[in-house]
Structures are given as structure tokens and as C-alpha cells.
Image 1 (tube, rainbow, N blue to C red):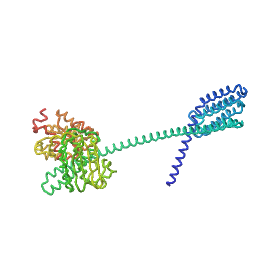
Image 2: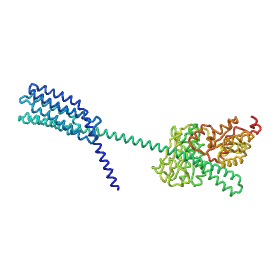
Image 3: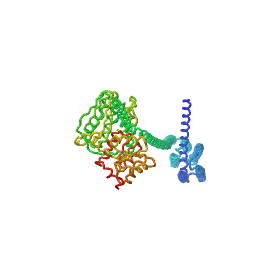
Image 4: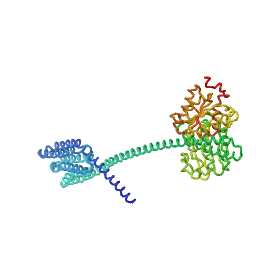
Amino acid sequence: MANGESAVASTHRDAGRRTRELQVRADLVASIYSHIPRSSLGVIAGALTVAWGMWGQVGHVVLLGWLGSIAAVLVWRFFLYQAFPKSGPELYRVAFWERSWTWSTAIHGAVWGSSALIMYVPGSPEYQALLLVALFAISTAAVPLIGRHLPSLYAFVLAVLVPIIARLALEGSAVRILLAIISALVMYGIFLFGAELNRTITESVRRRYENVDLIEQLTHQTAQAEAARKEADRANLMKTRFLAAASHDLRQPMHALGLFSDSLRRRITDPEQHALAARICQSVEAIERTFDALLDISRLDAGVVQPKTEAFALQDLLERVIGDCATEAASKGIGLRMRSSRLGARSDPVLVEQVLRNLVNNAIRYTDRGKVLVGCRARGSKVSVEVWDTGIGIPDEKQERIFDEFYQAAERDRREGLGLGLAIVRRLTRLLGAKLTVASAVGRGSVFKFELPACISPAARRAHPSVPSRQPLNALAAAVILVIDDDPSVLLAMEEALRSWGVRAVKARSLHCALERLPECECYPDAIVSDFRLGEDLNGIDAVERIRHELGIAIPALIVTGDTAPKSLRAIQASGLGCLPKPVTADRLLQELCRLLEPRGTVASPETRGIGSR
């Protein structure tokens, strides 16, 4: 079957080549016929010149008859010119027009060649030379036009020159024989010149068609590439929409689960049950990290992340990352070391820390024994932040693929993540304008480096603990927070978490419900925590603005959402409201609420905040 398909393909190629050669011949024939009017003027001028030169040596009737024969040939050619299709001949008629032209040139050449019989003046070298020059001139002048079709060229030149060469040879004298030989050699030279000219012109026409084919192929390939790009964009958009929808639907119950599990852990006093609840919380936090990675990709793709450049000490950053990752490294039995540095950099410290954290986590994940080393080096006006490991290494052919979304080494357990860490690293380094490089040897380890603008290191600052202290926790006591979410389980989980912190929660499943419940609160809410998607063609931003307008107060507000669509993320950023992605751990929610309510100072009493006091 394969041989049959090959034979069919070969037949198609042969047919295509034959068609192309016919197109080339058709173009050459068309160019010949298009020059008939101009070439006819040259023939008339040449014939009249020869007749005038021979007027006193040859009978007038003979000369006029010869001129009449020339005129008859030109009339024939004129009719051929008129009949020839102006748009070019059909391919199946090419041979007919070639034969017609060959016959006309052969007869035309015979008329000129007959001058060797009727105009040759014996005993007059001057007129013999005149005739010889005229015949060679007409033969040579015809080459650029007739040379486009070699059979016509050969027929014309032979018909013109063979009679005069034969006449000279028959004279018998040594000089005439020598002239005949020279004339024959010149005729051969005309043939060579004509053949070379024909090859050049034919090749030029053939190349023109090949260029047309290439342009058509390029146009077709460009159209295919554009169609593929549009299809890829459409598929990517569909993927983004699907992931956003799926992510939102998954984040809602996970958000409630995280808050419920934290509340459960706080209430349990039995050590064994408390340990079990703690493990549940750890599992929820692991899922949260996965969702956070997806959100990071979405935020970067949406363009809502913008660097905030400042000078910072790299030592602070290194210590935070090493401290946070030390437990994971210790659990695998590998060393995690840091080289102290006095270097400083000018960039966005938050984004740089995320890049370094992802690189260190990746190094720990792919290192089973040995160590991971983190450090910085001065490189002229740059500072190179480097992460070395003694892990499994990366083959050369995969060193670009590791930065693709969802790519994971085949050797690793798929439960260790989705393969987004390095994809986020590449996006962040591009956003920061940092040069990212990787070098690796299979079985020996890898080194990841990214360069930042160097600067004088500011004074080192110790990081504040991520979990709020008891003082801000106490400041939340007696606060009233309006919670808006269309998911009942999320409302219950939020109420439970807020109650454990001494906060009163006013729950509402929609903006309409929230507006109805405000008069029942007997006070203004200290803050609003709203989901983004609320239905009714409204979102959390609309809800916050409407409530602020109703109360006439710019109440602090926070959007807690599972929506990762780029359009939604850009809208939240443009609103200026704080945003937390679902699922949110209890500690993280508590920290954000403390930050949100910090400017309020002590909690106002219901009398000073009452709706009726307006």
C-alpha cells in the first residue's frame, strides 16, 4: 500500500512538472508574439536598405518581387499576431503556436536566403560583401527574439546563411572558400549564442514561476500559521475560562473546609485528636499553596502584578526564605545552607523573594541527598542570586521545557505539585527584567541564577512574624464585620472563624440581603468581607460601593474570591480594594483583618456608630 501511495505521489509530481514546463513555454511564445509589431519594423528597414543598395545591380522586377515576398511574410505574421490570445495561449495550444511561428520564421529566412541566388553579383567583391554583411546582420539581429524558441532560430539562421555559404564555396577560389568556412563558423557561433540566451531566458521564466509558487506556499503557510495561532488563542482562552470556572467551584468548599478545620483544631483539647486536626490543617494548607500557584499564573497573565522597585538588603530576604524552607529540607534529610551577604539590590523585594522561594522549593523537591546552597555574588553592576543543589540534574534537551506550565520531571511523584513553580519564576524574572539562567549535569545537580541591579545594601531589617500577635487579635474584639457570600457553607465557616476571634459576623447571601440586614445591626459594620461573584449581575466591588453609598461612610472592605479570570483580577486591582484568594487559611485571614482594621483604633460603641445617629 505504501508503494502504491508513493507511485501516486510520484505521478502527481510528474504531472505538475509537465504542467509547469508548458506554462514556461506558453510564456516564451507569448513574449515572441508580443514583439511581432516592433520586429516587423526592423525587417522592413533592413529589406529596403538591401534593395536600395542593390538597385543598380539587380533587375527592378526581381527586387520588387523579393520585397513583395518579405511583405507577404510580414502580413502572415500580422494575422498570427492578431489571432494570438492576448491573455496567453491555452496550454494544450502551445505546440500549435510554436509550429506556426517556426513555419513563418523558416519561410521568412528562406526569402532572405534567396538573395544569395538573385542578388549575388559575380566579379564584384563590393556587392558580394554588402550582401554577406546584410545576411549576417539580419541573422544576428533576430537572435534576441527568435532565440526564445530554438527550433525557430535554427530554421531561420540555416535558411538565411546556408545559401550564401554554399554560393561562396561553389565559386571555387581560395578566398571564397575561406569566406565560406569563416561564415560557417560564425553561423555556429550564432547557434551557441542563441542556445545560451534561450537557456537564460527559459531559466528566468522558470524561476519566476518557482518564486510565485514559493509566495503561494508562504502565503498558505502564513494563513495556516495564523489559523493555528487563532485556534491556539481560542483554546488557551477556553482553557483559561475552564480553569477559572473549575478553580472557583473548587475554591469555595476548600475555603470553608480550611476555616472549619482551623476552628476545630482550636476547640479540641485531646492531644491525639488535636494532632489529627493539625494534620488536616496542614493538608488544607498544601492545597492552598497549589491554588496560590494557579492564582499567581493567572495574575501574571492578567498583567495585574506590577513591580515596586526599591533598594533592599539581600541578607534579610535570604534569611526569610531559608527559615521558611528549613523544615521541609530537614524532613528529607538534606542540608539547606546560606552564604551570608552584605550585598543589596534594587528591585521589587516581594517578587524577588517569591522567585527565590520557588527556586529553593524546587531544589529541595528534586534533591534526595546532599545539600542546597543559596547565596549572592557581585557581577559588576549586577548581583547574581544563586541556588545550587546536588539533585537529579536536568538533561540539556529539557532545560527549556522545565519552565513550561505543568511540566514535571518524569522521575518525580506527581503528588509533589502541579509543575508551576518554575513557570512562575520565568514570568516573574521577565517582569523584573532579570536575566535567568540554568546549568545542570544529570546525576550531579543544578544551579539556577538570576541577576538584579546592584546597589548599596540598606540596613538589615528583621522580618515581622507572619501570624498576628495577641495585641491586634484583642483589637478585633467586639468588631462587627459584614460578610457577603452566596455560598451558605462559606458564610457558616466565616462566622465560626470570626466568632473564635471575638468578632460579630453579620451574614448576607446577596447585596439585597445585606442592605435589608443593615438596620438590624444597630451599628455600622467595621469592615465588609465580600465574595467577588454574587450573581444578579453584581460583584463584590458593586456591593461594597453600594453599601458605602447607603451608609455615607468609606467602610474598609476586603474581597475574598475564588475567581482567577484575568478580567476579574484586573477589576479588583482597579477598585483599590484588598483581595485574598480562596481558600484562605485562618491565620492569613486574621492577619489581613488586623491590617484592615488597624486605622480604626479602639472599637466604637454602638451608640457612637449607630445608624440612628445619622
